[in-house]
Length: 126
Image (cartoon, rainbow, N blue to C red; front, side, top):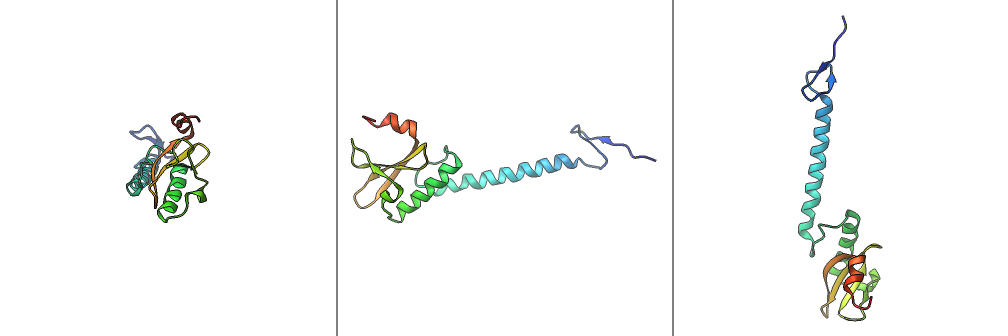
């Protein structure tokens, strides 16, 4: 006597009482959703908004922000003062992103991370 495959309501075929394929996909989806929620919750601790940036840029920007919070010199991160406004400091995060900071005298206050294209547009004489 041979067994017959049955068609589950989801459209998959199998021998069991439940569709194991759909259960595996659902558990994978839930794990990804939980990982995304954990990643989103890390943005609450950032001094500036980093939500719309790629993950590698966020990780690198956070390391630079932590260094600045520990009163490390911005030049350690290859930061430079802008020519038109010497109080504005540009620190390269990656090839395509810059961290813009403002010199407050005793410390450097981060303002935003912008793409290199936006950075080139906003600075005069660039």
